[in-house]
Image 1 (cartoon, rainbow, N blue to C red):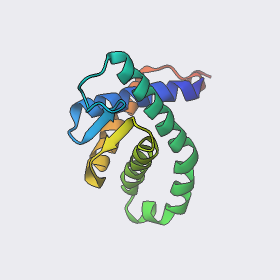
Image 2 (tube, helix red, strand yellow):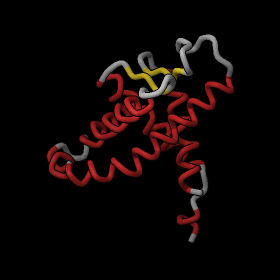
Image 3 (cartoon, helix red, strand yellow):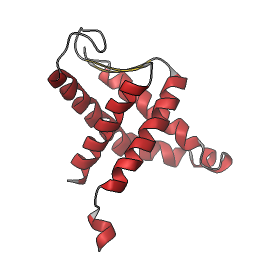
Length: 135
């Protein structure tokens, strides 16, 4: 259940980021971003991208974080933004293997998008109840 909640939060955060930032687009099929598609196509693509992003964060990110401990210490935790940007670029690459997915213009766009996605996900997580906090 927690995994599905994370997928929903990440999907909403990615969708809002694609609306707010130039250089971050959710592409459905062969159509250009924001043209020639219905809201259902967009919702399906965002759901698939969110699933990929959540899986990457659950599987790859912990391994990278352990390997990057010296960089976290050296930068006083700011390296976390770099890792988030790399996870977003990996998600973009994986979803780019199909004809739809997340398109990011470059590393600096990914860094800004990772920051925005993290803030949106944090705000959404605050409003959702967590069973572990109650007990």
